[in-house]
Image 1 (cartoon, rainbow, N blue to C red):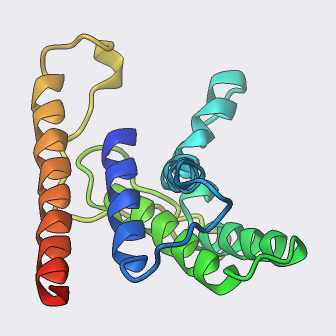
Image 2 (image 1 turned 180 degrees about the vertical axis):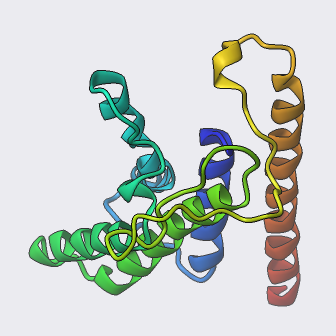
Length: 178
């Protein structure tokens, strides 16, 4: 299962790709606000573990991992942005939708687990790929289980790969400008 590291790196990657021509910020005067926002959106679907800790039942990868909630959260952000008279409503909607969808995409390609309720509320069926890209995590083994080294190494390589691609893209764009 991708950790917040992979979800955050992917969110940053998508944000940078979509804002290649933009020097302005989306949310305010400071770039750290945009960074905090994209990290939050990239990981918000996994906040469903909180009710699972407090209540009995299985909440993880339920409705929060559906395309419906993805769309509703993106639309809500756009409406709030519109209410505060922000000019980037469409761009913020699309970036939010893309980043949230990336979370679902990464989780879909994960080994282990029952899948996710991708098409909730239309069906309660769980969906997952028959081919896994991300290695599974054995939560029951605890935080310091030695088998997690594979997972950590994989996510480090994955994150390094995405950042290398961004670096190549930005270098080629700078070379075209000069």
